[in-house]
Amino acid sequence: MSNNNITRQDEIGQNIGYRYDVNLLPDYSRLTPFLKRYVKIMGWQDLNWLEDVHLGFEGDTPAVFDRNINGWLRLPEGMELPDEQQDRDMLAREVLIRFQMSSKHPMVELRRAYKKF
Image (tube, rainbow, N blue to C red; front, side, top):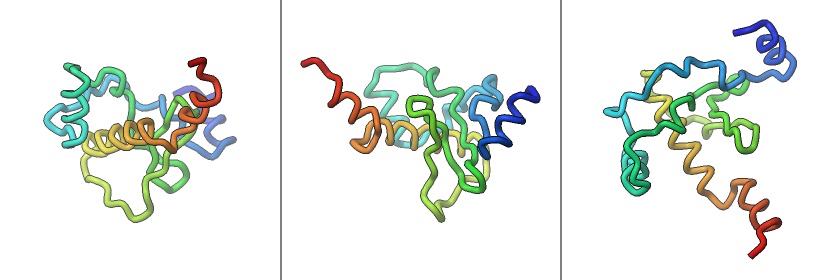
């Protein structure tokens, strides 16, 4: 990681999500039940667009970075985290997808405001 990233992290008080090892491929045997259904419904063979999604931290709070809103999604307080990083990353992917599909995602408001039809 470059010094610029470290300096920027210090300035904003957050970890920068893309600094994680994107070469760590997901272990598909660790898919959550939700992710298994999601992949099957979407007709996909892999999670390639989610491979660089990892559980990080915003301050001391476990969080996942959502590039669409350029912000962190904090996990609920007191949520039990798995011990293994691969399991934590699968949890992060599930949280991200669930939020992006929810009516609370800011993109829903943008769509309502700017859709043409």
